[in-house]
Image (cartoon, rainbow over all chains, first blue to last red; front, side, top):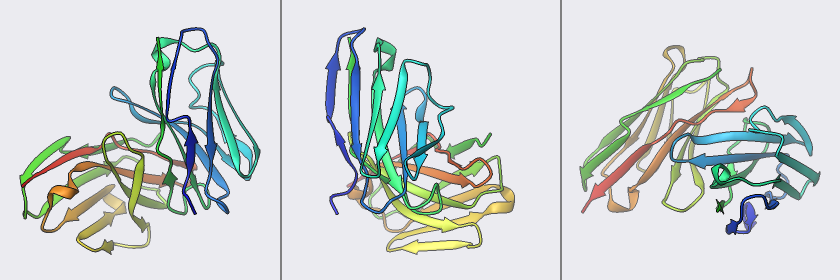
Amino acid sequence: DAGVIQSPRHEVTEMGQEVTLRCKPISGHNSLFWYRQTMMRGLELLIYFNNNVPIDDSGMPEDRFSAKMPNASFSTLKIQPSEPRDSAVYFCASSLGLGQGRAFFGQGTRLTVV
Amino acid sequence: KQEVTQIPAALSVPEGENLVLNCSFTDSAIYNLQWFRQDPGKGLTSLLLIQSSQREQTSGRLNASLDKSSGRSTLYIAASQPGDSATYLCAPYSGGYQKVTFGIGTKLQVIP
């Protein structure tokens, strides 16, 4: 398996634009997580899915953030409109179970909003 | 809410030394705990997963211990090498909250 695949690896966008981050989890994993990492706050859990259903989105900072998982092999995280303070590295991770099994992380998407 | 603290925040050691990284967490009702490694500009790699019923877990030169009742875990690295230089993060899974919470990490530098 190729592991968790995220795209794009880097994204530079202007303030106010819509940004869509993509994730393909490891085949067979039933849980998917979106994290944001910054120097100031470390790794923050934004939202997670189990069997394609959102379980907890309390970490999503604002209504500008939304996430979907239309099927077991694909998820998106959208920011609309984007702001400079959204600049961070966004990670997607997948696992068997919500936390019972090892979590496997993608390489991340480095987002810069100017 | 689970809070995770890792000490020290940064550590620099000469090659060959044995070292210990510490992790403490406030909610002892955890299901398991993972130790991750993160290289600069990369994602996280799971090194060890230790179940709440276990006291230790070993993988090569790495040994993780868990004292759930006191809310502590340690990662022991034997005979450190320059390739071990990375940030190490501890992440307990709280079954009640159904969440994995990460510490800020310990940045390790092993000097040749």
